[in-house]
Length: 160
Image (cartoon, rainbow, N blue to C red; front, side, top):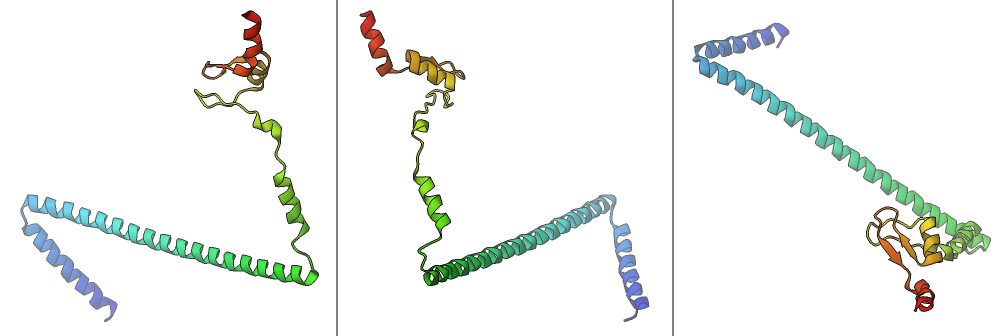
């Protein structure tokens, strides 16, 4: 078919639609216009979600292939690292041993950290100093009073 025949067939269908549309009563014409806009909106929404679904599908396929190749590469790295350590006589690299020994050291000063039972905030240095000195401190956030029973025993015994 050449372009003239295509335009002629489109013109024939368009003229038939216009004739049908003009024969309808006014409420039919209004409903036809509303229906055409609704169909157009639904078609656009459908196309949007189809494109969005294809994009998500492609994204997650690429993401999965990336993680698969990354895992395979990491596996080969560990395999060749093991071969290297086997050939060189090393058990494992020295840097990893240093990291593991650093993790075993725990700072005991950080274990004496107190938190407010009312609001959950960490005690400030001033509150910790007040607790150590007097045995009583107030939370700076919510105002709840805290008492250290072991610290109050000598104070109570001197007043009784």
